[in-house]
Image (tube, rainbow, N blue to C red; front, side, top):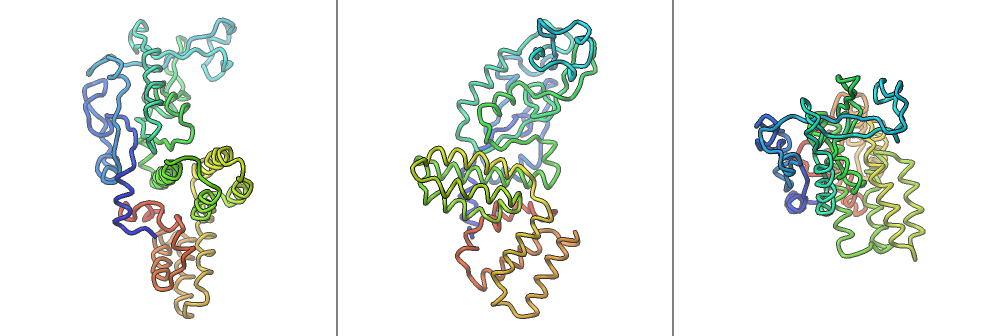
Amino acid sequence: MATQAQDKTFCENIQIGISSCLLGNNVRYNGGHKLSRFCADTLGEYVSYIPLCPEVAVGMGTPRPTIQLKAKPGPELDEQLARKPVSQWPEDQIIIRAVGTKDDSLDVTDAITQYGKDQAKKLQHISGYIFCAKSPSCGMERVKITTDTHPQGESIGIGLYAQQIMKANPLLPVEEDGRLNDLPLRENFITRVYAYKRWQQLCATGTPSVGELTKFHSQHKYLLMAHDPDTYYKLGPIVAEAKGREQQAANEYIALFMKTLAKPASRKRHVNVLMHIQGYFKQMLSSDQKAELKDTITDYRQGIKPLYAPLTLLTHYLREYPNEYLQAQVYLNPHPSEMRLRYSM
C-alpha cells in the first residue's frame, strides 16, 4: 500500500481542468463567482488546477450579457414539427447556437466551439475536468435549450465548450460542481481521476508492455470488481492476447476500464470484494478476529457502518499479516485516505 508521503507526491502530479468560477474567480456574467469549497479547499490540497472560462477567453468580458443555447430548425425540418419542443426534432435537423438571452444578434457559437477545440488539444495531459453545471458553455449535461416557440426550454443540452473537451478526450473523467455534492458521485469521480493518472503514468514512456499491462490489471482487480465484476473478466482476455498487438490491446483495455469505473460501485459489490479479501486471512485470524471482521462487513452491508470501517480493519490485518498481492491492490487505497471519501459510503 502507498504511504501518505507517496500519496502526497502522487497527488502533486495530478492536473485537473476546472471552470474558473468554481475556484472563486470573478468571471461569471454578473461579475461574481461560484466558489466550490470542495474543489478549492479539499481537492485543491491534492491536485493542481488549470482554471479556464471560455466566455471570458473569447472576449465577452465580465460582467457581460447572458447567453443561452438556442435551437434553430434545419432546412428540411417540417414547419409544424418545428413548433414542437426540440426534444421531438430529428437530431440531424437541430442547429444549436449560443446566443444572447435578450439579443439573438450576439452569437458566440463559433468562438466558444473553436476555443473548446483548441483547449482540448492543449489539455491532453490532464487527468480530469470539473465543469460549472448548467452553463451554456461549460455544462456537462442538462443544459437548457430554448426555441422560438418554447422559450422556457428543455434541459437536454451540453455546453459548447464542454462538448468539445469531452468529444476530444472521451476517456477523461469529467464531473460538474453540483454533482460533486453527492458523496458517492464525488468518490467515484476522484477514483476515476486517480485511476486515469496511473494509466497516464504507465503510458508516459510509450505503449505498455504485456507485462506492464498484466500488472496494471492485477493491481486493479478488486477495484474493477467493485464496479462491475463481469467487465473485470472481459478485460482479462484483452491482456492475455496482447502480445504482438500491444498498442491496440492498450487502447481497447483503457476504453473498457474507464467505462467500467464510470459505473458507481454498489454496496452489494463492495461487500463481495470485502469478503474476497477476508478470505486471505482465514488461516491467520483468531475466532474472535474473524467474528469481528464478519460483523463489521455485515454492518456495512446493512448500512450501519460506512465502508471505511471494514477497510480499516482489513488494512490493520494486512499490516499484521503482510500479503504482497493484497498490498498491491488499488482498491484498498484508490485515493488519499485524508480526503475521507469513503466515510459516508
